[in-house]
Amino acid sequence: MIRAIIALLFAALFLIITLPYIFIVWLISKKHPDKAYALAAPPAMWGLRVVSFLCSVHLNVTGLENIPKDRSVLYIGNHSSIFDVILTYPLSPRPTGYLAKKEMTKVPVFKLWMDVLFCLTLDRSDTRQALGVILKAIDYEKQGRSVFIFPEGTRTKDGTLGAFHAGSFKVALRSGCPVIPVAITHTAEIIRDHIPFVKTTTVNISYGTPIETKGLSVEEKKHLANHVRDIISGMLDEMD
Image 1 (tube, rainbow, N blue to C red):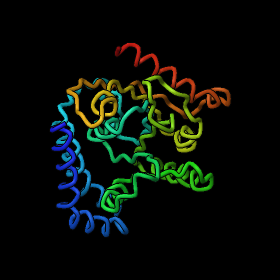
Image 2 (image 1 turned 135 degrees about the vertical axis):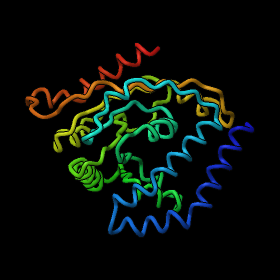
Image 3 (image 1 turned 90 degrees about the horizontal axis):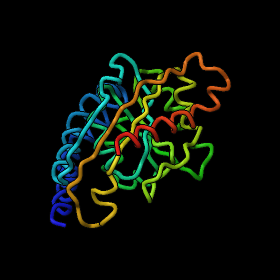
């Protein structure tokens, strides 16, 4: 429990101490979003790495060579813990925004960071708002910014891989960017399965081979969500 308290205290102090800085960066983002991202990403990645260290997470990463360095991608991953974001974000080689639920913006300081780091918030009860978010994500991809989506829509409670929402894949199909399957194991074991205690955990993250979306047939587009889900399911089986 001591490690959990230390990690929470660090996160709170980080948000408080960096408030003046991120507010200035947020103002810069209104006219120069890419410059603002470049200013915000390094401290954000450092902070997340410190949280991971304080929680005694041991990370095994494979497949980073599969991520194109010269173009944006749509990351599609399985989801069971907030640590899925904490651990994958510092691994992104290009500007990357995450799709998150709107409840994440309730902390004002946290919202400033999310805005600057190209994060998108989704209101599942508002169809029009959800469509607007998808269109914004498509624009991000066309502008060279990657997007990370957990298409199960929520964290799985028992570790099983849920159904993938097909709407998430419109980001790749409409922008023409490749899909990178991402398989993540054991993040729920860090804290969620035994709140408020933190457990030393080895997490495996694997980045799969890019799936090109340009030139897919109508039938292939229709089944893309299930195809990527099957790939991630197979990656998870291999990692276990």
